[in-house]
Image (cartoon, rainbow, N blue to C red; front, side, top):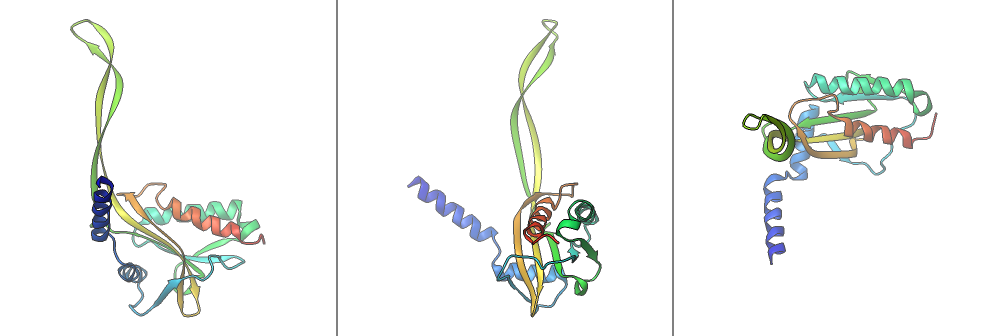
Length: 194
């Protein structure tokens, strides 16, 4: 009975916090700057076209995230580009073969506080000795929902090759977007070497 109550609680939470696929597609269209009727569908096959690729980075105004992708593309072209095909970043969606899109829902911040025990050395004034004590270390973190996509042009719009969702820390770090880039690299390496 306890398990059943937990399942109901989780299901209720998920139904309140999750957006529908129609809502998600609408948010993606808005992020890409295309109209409501623009076709976006799941790809029939999860593979990238052969040869060098032109990609568009749909990361909004997050310049630090854009810098991460630019750095990774440069590394790719230096190390794997000759074997698996180069990657060029283009400035216009219409010039791209593939779009890498990532956005966060910044008004859905989730705060959490965690406390962990930590052993440290402290000076005891009463005894004049250094002693080992366990103290509680408390820290807080904030996360937001993140959505990442690898999209390929199709005959009538865009095809979703990969969808990646999860909670990420607020702010941008040198690793922000790494999971999406790793998936793109994996797809690139699945292609036949050039």
